[in-house]
Length: 157
Image (tube, rainbow, N blue to C red; front, side, top):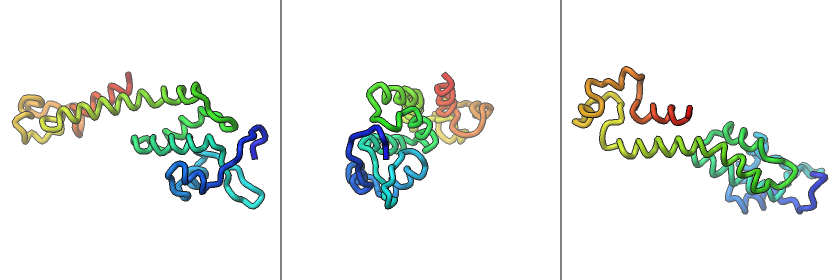
């Protein structure tokens, strides 16, 4: 049990009810080190209230397409033995902002080009003759080059 906290610990069932996550998912995240349950002498997992926010962050980040490793890297920046404050959360949000901006840019390009040429090399649409004459995008590599190339450039920026 944490020595420096006076807050009441929550059972895994209480945390599941508050986050909407299955108990098995919470156990998995604990086993993966994304949250850190305290154990009672009987082995029961108990959580700090701040773990609700950590688990909610994991859920949102996964829905945005971030891998568990990406999430783990960000969560390592948060303190374990105290509730993260606004500054702590701002720090990790900066880490995700660049990824989100790049992803948003790629989605916008995909949306804007979905009904036209995305540089896939099919040359089956009349628009391909305008945007990718003679399959020039093929020289840049496989796949939808006109959408993916800018996404790579955005990540490097």
